[in-house]
Every structure is written in C-alpha cells, then in structure tokens.
Length: 61
Image (tube, rainbow, N blue to C red; front, side, top):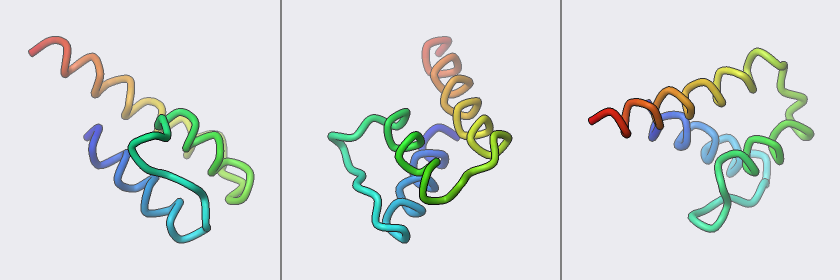
C-alpha cells in the first residue's frame, strides 16, 4: 500500500508539474500537491493514513 500511495502521488505530481523524486519526501510532496490541486482534506488524509499504516506494517514484520 505504501508504494501504491507514493506512486499515485508521484503520478499526480508529474501531471501537474510538481517536482518529485527520491530526494523529495512523501510528506513534502503531498504538501506541494495540496495547493495546485486544492486537495480535499479527506483525500490528503487518505494519503497520510496509507503512509502511516504502511510504516507500522513494515516495522511489525
């Protein structure tokens, strides 16, 4: 799920001209996408939740 969330955010960034890549943290990418896309809070929260749950799952295994 974590990689899916990152891939979706990067794909969106590429389409709207927002910089992304290995040097850009996911949290920063989401913040950069929020303004040009006017992301609804529930959409932004879904990306954050995917990241948090994925991190927990990775550390449990």
